[in-house]
Length: 234
Image 1: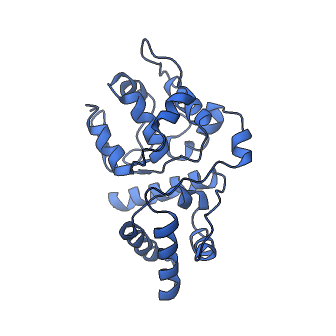
Image 2: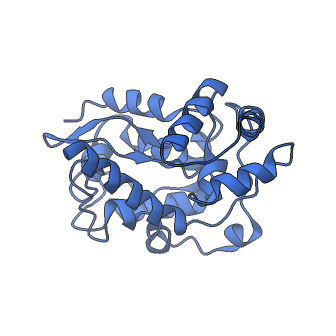
């Protein structure tokens, strides 16, 4: 029952998150229309375009989606897999921000609206699925490399079990590489200074230059998880 609860909590929270994101353009290529037709029925398409996976991983994800009810013929499945494994493979360029996104005011509070479905308006998170930001972000920032790691989480996502103050969390956070450097810097500064949080002594607000320095590393969510383990957090 606990596993089933966590699965549904994760799916519902991610659904709220996907609905809050703007649609990113899919790269042109054979199979694009099928991806739009089949994937967009459940996901905001921006979630798909942010992913960079190997052919094997895309194959596994399609199988997972079929388990959730995705209906495709063998021919459609092959075309979708070929498209994803070619156009959204590791190392493929992330979709450029739209003009609307680039022109948006980089308000941390406004960007955080994309995060509320998982981390809640109070920063408390969801037990077992999504960790609290309140009280935990300053701990991350105080750790050596923690500031850079938070940027990496925003850019590349995080997947796998983590522990915060003795409690375990095992939700899935997608990357937000489609956001501008200014938007990522703004939302990180926001979560570092809300709900009683404060930047550690000697640290200032996040900058666009800091975010840019972490772009292009093409990390996987699992690599970001491994990097967290090096921070010495409990």
